[in-house]
Image (cartoon, rainbow, N blue to C red; front, side, top):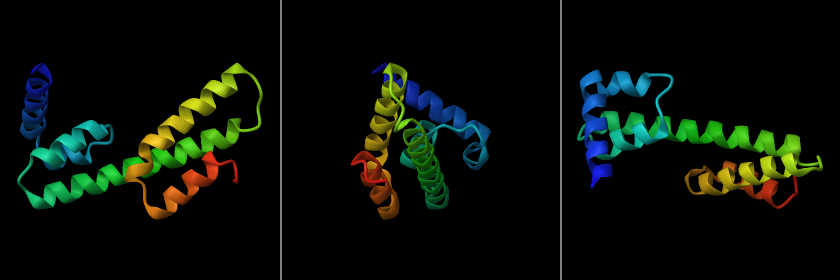
Length: 113
């Protein structure tokens, strides 16, 4: 129940700031963008929010691929933790990835890159 209220308050704050202005803010979170996309009736704003979500997802995928590659051949507990965290993030983002990104993720996770 409280999460529903949190979402309603969050959306109201975003709306008051201006949905388009909020979307174009550099530090906007994927959670806020998803909230805007789900709750707005304006198709143009919904489309822009979805594009921004895809862009942030793509950036996160590329960042995690680079991190995984950087620590792929290092030994030790810290390197293992970084690889596991990076691979978990890639697995979570796989569903929203483009076909090319899905291929890259599979290649990384299967150790073929």
